[in-house]
Length: 328
Image (cartoon, one colour):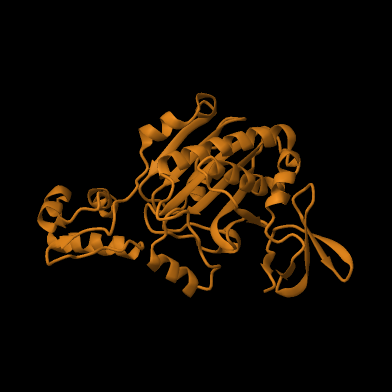
């Protein structure tokens, strides 16, 4: 097992640490400690060596506090969760939930990680951020039967995320169909919804949320070098929301969304989504099965499909393998 997560917690205070006590605490030799330090650097942490034999992080890390997280969740919402798994490292929070047994009908299970080694977005794209620099969480929920407009549940989750962020005075965000969360036109986060049908007619839905909270400069540069949309984070005037209460608010909002969606489908979320629509009435470029088309985005319909106007006609586009970009 990698020692990097344990080393991360030892360095999280941002103080300068001598390597010899770190080796003793971890039970490692010098070469193994160097490998663990390299592993953290490969995950995107910007480690400093103020002098030979010492190491530190540029600033303290805001690690998620499990007891505080559970205490901040309202009792009614916590009772709907069979469990909350908090991990230092995982390949993907979505994959972790999909591989496990689904919870009982009308309940959920959550997975939260400090770092994802193989986080995913739509169309197989990767989602990766340095440890403790963002939010990586997934909520798995079992519906006794498929709710109306189930294909739009990722859009409803986007509204839930905006509701949660508003509680932390993060306002003025927008949503880009079908799954991006934008701040000033830059990508703050994304949502990935995955569905498994069960033999008894129920469906297990996993909603993954990735958000940048405090993204280091190196991580920003890596995203831009990969050709991704320019990233944004939640830092405003030098500070960002605490991650533990932020995760609690997100889980509360997502559980409330699942309950509301089960009862009424996408209808309660449609108007909020349209108000936050980043591309409504703007020229857009659509890539669909390697075919490139240009038109105007005209919002979404009651099932969450994009209303795409081209040549005076409105077409309905469902998420699938469609890629959407604004025309500059």
